[in-house]
Length: 180
Image (tube, rainbow, N blue to C red; front, side):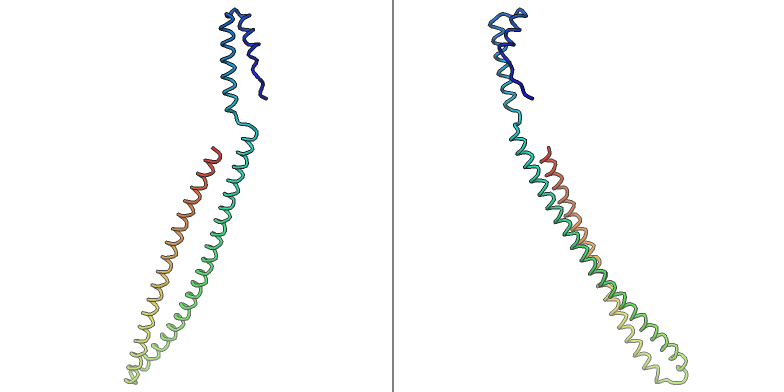
């Protein structure tokens, strides 16, 4: 609780202590003025209420930004779900290719058994082998494309993570300015 400084009482005490009257009164006036100037710089209840209101606004803004960050993370999670589905589709494609390779191996075994008997079958096997090489090349191209997609996604996620970190650092800085 703030109390008023009684300059008259202070001057009387100085006089009672043996201070000359003019000096006691001047000292009391100067001290009273200094205390009044200091007290004028103190925050009022209205000042504190405005400060609290500003702080609440800042916290509201921070809450909104965190909400936006949460939505962004949800969006990223959905994108990962789509990527997972694409990987599942690629895995199914690999399974189909593996089955085709098994069938080709069975055919090659049969061709080896018949190679001594039928010279004409050799041309057919060479054609099938050429098709197989083409399929493998196509598969290699698809694998390279999937690998390139994966590198792009990693780069995108690293960029988004760096952006999020910069946003969080900025929010911390704003909070420190608001509180400080």
